[in-house]
Length: 156
Image (cartoon, rainbow, N blue to C red; front, side, top):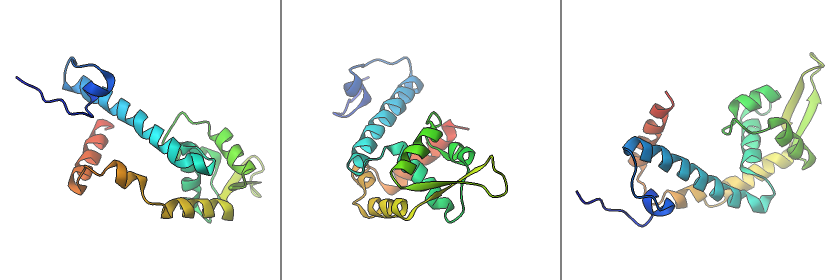
C-alpha cells in the first residue's frame, strides 16, 4: 500500500512517518494543530497587547454584558482551563479593559464587567479580516461542520 503524504501533513511537520495506528496519529495531529493555531492566535493579538487568553476573558465579559461576572464563572467558561483567571483579570484591569467591583450584596464576591475600552478593542478585532477564514481556506463549510461533530465526539 502506498500512502500519499502531502506537503503539510503531520508526518512532514514532525518528521515522523510511522504511527502505531490512526488513532495515535489523530491525537498527535490534533495536539500539533492546536499548538499551531495557538501560535497563529498569539501573532493575531500581539499588536493589541493582549494574549489569546485575555481575549477569551474579554469575549466572556462581552457575552454577559451588561451583567457582571464572577471570577469562578470566567474560569468555568475559559477555553484554556489551565489559565490563571485571576492574573488575566488583573492584567486586563490594569489596561483599562475591565473593572472589578465588590458586590453590594456579598462583600466577598467581586463583580467583573467589561469597560467601554474593552468593548472598543473587541469591536476593532471583530472588524479585522478574519484570520480564521485564511486558516481554513482549504476547508469547505460542510467539512468544517463535520470536523466540529468529530471533535465534539472525542470529548463525549
